[in-house]
Image 1 (tube, rainbow over the protein chains, first blue to last red):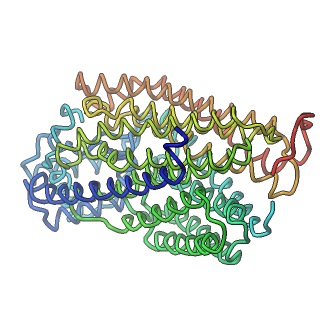
Image 2 (cartoon, chains in turn blue, green):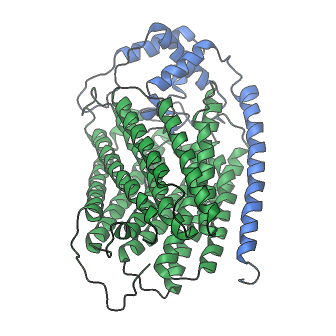
Image 3 (cartoon, rainbow over the protein chains, first blue to last red):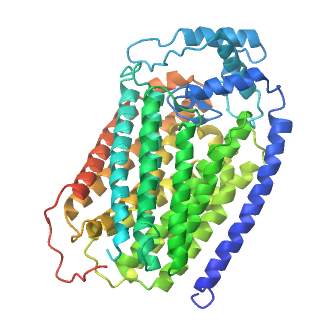
Length: 150
Length: 447
């Protein structure tokens, strides 16, 4: 093997092969970008409210307790399908009411239960957050999660 | 230590170990909150604790990489660093940025993309520090001897710094956000960081075993080729359920299965080099950490990664404690232990004395490795139960979590052992000055 695979051959295989895989990856990513915009997330308009909701989601670092499409921390429930679980996926007002009611009741203060902090969020922001979660929920995620439990 | 400028690595390693302590203590607190959830729930909620835990980890590993580069590049290039002053300026920027990030997290100012929560000015600071580093190291390498080790190390560090640009790109479309987020997260830990890891491992093998450089460097190219050939398209295993096309399920499953191979190759490489090597290097602890790192990386990143990477399996396990189990052992084996191997090797030189207090250092290896292994086992069991109850039966999240209390208690216990090991490592490396064991009679003085 040592005659066939010299150091310089190994190096050339490394550079050439890596470049090949980078090109393939970039091409597939470009296609995926298009697919996301045109197909998988096209079911609901990306409104200003959804944008605002995403910023609210980020500003309070919700991802470090919850998962969203299965990514994040594993300390609190999945929220990528929370609007389905609550039965308000197609009901903007109902989604806001449910989310607002839930978040107003936090923290529960119950001994031995995980505590969700209380967040100071304006009504506009809360509506945005509800829209953002509805928007995320309607994304085509290849039928994940397997059931409503998330 | 052959070159004066290698000394800058000392400051990097010291700061890294300080952050290491913060990281494991943050982890311990998070494990505690899992068991007693009312702890600090209003003052320091779980999400903040977790940010400190993950961010401290990432920054100290990077500091360790930077320090390792500053230590090994002068020896490899056979010349002093381009600028010692720049290296210290870079460190100062990173320290200020880190303190700034910690301070702002504590008062509730942070972003919300996982692991990239740093305020914008800190992100820019990291970028500036990375540029300073790349300039400094590249000019040193270009002016001196070129070796495969510096080649691969530099390539890894350049690429990971370039990928940092995606930390600034945050599309409004959540699925796009997630896709590009993985350009930093996956292509760091499952591609570019592997290059850095392999380069450090190659350097350590060269020094510790005395095997011929040609052999080491040929192996290195094979390993990093395997890492990138599998790891780049292996990104697909994160593109199963985030709104990306269905074809990623096959691409991701196949290529991420192949990601096991470079870790197996790294482990084999380390053991074969030690068997072949004739040198009896006195720093046995560094050898233990090198072999241990490559072995635990194979199990944590390789085996535990494969465990849930096929899309048919991942459909049920995605986002459960199975992921947490894999994440902990993979990071520990591949990057924590490899950094600690480098610290263990370099610190005696940097402090200008023979390898010392090997017993305490080696004890810390077994404490940390044993603790992490046990933690991985209990989280794997917890994740298996969670997957069944939540994803198959369809029980609600919190009802399932209530059934996992015993596992979280055992995880806290294993975490405490890891913290003990980490603090012992730092103590053994930084404080103890007394020689505990005598070098064996057959010992050949190392480089």
